[in-house]
Length: 91
Image 1: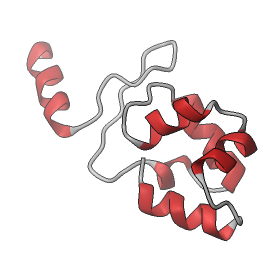
Image 2 (image 1 turned 180 degrees about the vertical axis):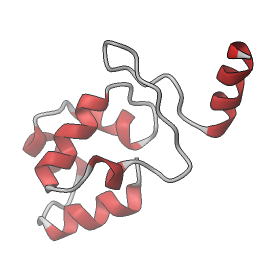
Image 3 (image 1 turned 90 degrees about the vertical axis):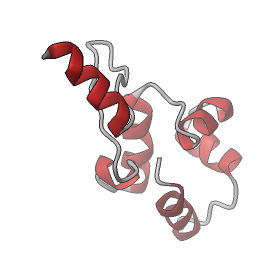
């Protein structure tokens, strides 16, 4: 997640902590921290946050990150190195 953008959005909406954000979007605090630190697996949580701030989902995704989703909405590929590994199995 793009922490810089998230902080700006939080400030604009008078949220001063991740705990306040987790309560506002009804996502458990530890799940929110996982998303912020790049360990989140559910795109649906990114969507909830984007909808809360009324911004496109792409606003929250860090640059140079790639996403491949499974049917149950899990993120499989998180960065360029994983993309290359995945593509090598396909070729």
